[in-house]
Amino acid sequence: MNNKEVWIKADDDRWETRKSRITTGLESGVDCVLVDSRDVDKVRELGDIRIAAFGSDTKENGDIVVIGKNSEGDGTRPLPADFSGSLDISNAARLREKGVKVAGYVIIRDKKYEMFAAELGEVCDYIIVIGTDWKVIPLENLIAGLHEKNVSIISGVKDWEEAKLAFETMEHGADGVLLDTDNPDQIKNTVSVAEKISAGKLNLKPALIRRVEPVGMGDRVCVDTCNLMKPGEGMLVGSQSEGLFLIQSESEESPYVASRPFRVNAGAVHAYVRIGDRTRYLSEIEGGDKVTIVDHEGNLREGVVGRVKIEKRPLMLVEAEVDEKVIKTIIQNAETIKLVGKDGRSISVAELKKGDEVMVYVEDSGRHFGMKIEESIIEK
Image (cartoon, rainbow, N blue to C red; front, side, top):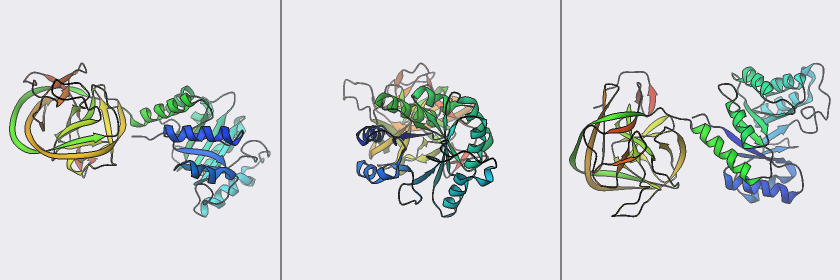
């Protein structure tokens, strides 16, 4: 996953307006708030969030020191003919040498400011760029010029549509956006866009069921998340890391039990579950951990584990074939445990039979301690 960040700009207007932006940002899950140094203590009282602060030269007053406001970056001071004489660049370099996290702030007025942003970015942890009349081309140039440098590009935007464009510019896109709006819906939608792009997408395939049979009693894992899932959503679980089945959440009503859309009855304790770009054993998962929620089209989003329940239950072996590979998983033998067909509709394990098709994820590489590696590993 390539995590995209959302920052909120809250350094202008009166405090009540700034406070409203910050509060909405906190509630929506933004990653950072940009304020003047005078507001840092007030923001700390509102909640736990990363703070970038203008007008500060110590890491104690904000988590990130921002250079460029009321200076060369925003045009208050003229740019020097030779960037080696830049006050902003020298200040950023000095602070970074002290171990302070530094962000450069540049309003891109013309080509010279774009070049200045590229130079400033080389001595910063973040470079914040605000477009004026033209936005995409300067951002493309900065991404191309700085992609091998250890700096994150934060692009100024006004709404979620601009944020989406910034995230998708060129192959990599901006690392984050600085959102300048009072509209709560725009803040929430921008966070949603960032989460979706960060999560990415997997190529799921239909696999043909070869065998379904009871295997006796064993310990199975129920993952209760802090998230509500829809039909067709669940987690990727399997006995082999190279082939994982989409196990649907308990999001559908049953004659026997109420729906529990926060729950995935995932499978036996030995099984792998895909989380981000890695796999973990189901038996390792615990409250507070992050998990990856997947739908039948392969769209991903992040979830949080609320609790995990491991209980003895009757188990069922499910074996399928895809791309000439045989993959397996072991899940609880109960009507409420469901896999997902290629049309997005669920299939209960109680009704699953040879010849059915279910959605799976397969990859060629093996895994060592959950990490993808290029070597031959046989699991069966």
